[in-house]
Length: 322
Image 1 (tube, helix red, strand yellow):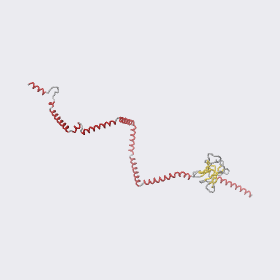
Image 2 (cartoon, rainbow, N blue to C red; image 1 turned 90 degrees about the vertical axis):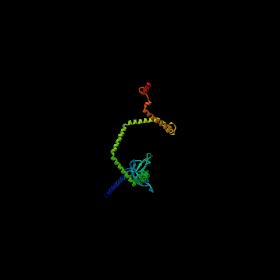
Image 3 (tube, rainbow, N blue to C red; image 1 turned 45 degrees about the horizontal axis):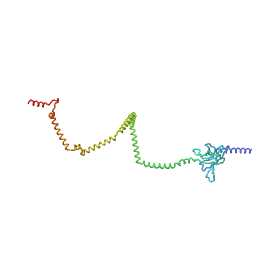
Image 4 (spheres, rainbow, N blue to C red; image 1 turned 30 degrees about the vertical axis):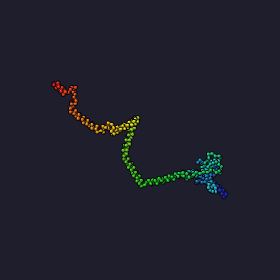
């Protein structure tokens, strides 16, 4: 009886131990009933890679990281063992690359197969290795090229701020305040005179409409002006100006001759004797005209109807009687 009890206890213990091992393997992502191949990849830095992290091919999980350990006594490199389902053949030249699996920085290994290959790796072979930079590395890759530009920008910003401080001194601040006050007054003035501005704009609109409606007349006026300008251009204005200049020169010559005493005109103008003679002749002519007005019959004897003067007839009659 005791022997059977011990056997039962032993069987239960074995089953429990098997279930425990299977459960732990299941929790680690291992399948005790499937066959897997193991490959090795050596890295100088694993960037937070841990055991049981997934191994993917084109985004599909084909295995996991089984273990990690230093590859040599120098402890400068780490050997990572990868368990991959034997359903997937790994071509020669394949690279095992450490990548970020999500935005939280969870690491995994991506299998990158070459486009051209000659055969497949066997179980236990060592794969090529590479790693993708972490989030910090990616940020540094983006920031480092901009470092010089950022330094220049900060220097320029410092200069701008210094210049701005120099510009915004007390006097300039007062001037800016006064300018803002004037601007506010201008805005208020425009607001108060908005109806006048509207009226001016309406007048401008009417003017533009009038101009548009009379465009034909304006075009004719422009054409007439162009014709007039063409006519003036065809006239020999230069020759007319030359002739006028020559006439002025001749007139100047004549006036110079008169002023210099050359010719009769100058003598008449400048001689006193001629002036005196003309004055005496004018006086005598005035006397004759006055005498003529008093006794016109003395100087003029005629009959309107062709007859002789009565005084002449009377004298003739007296002679005949004698």
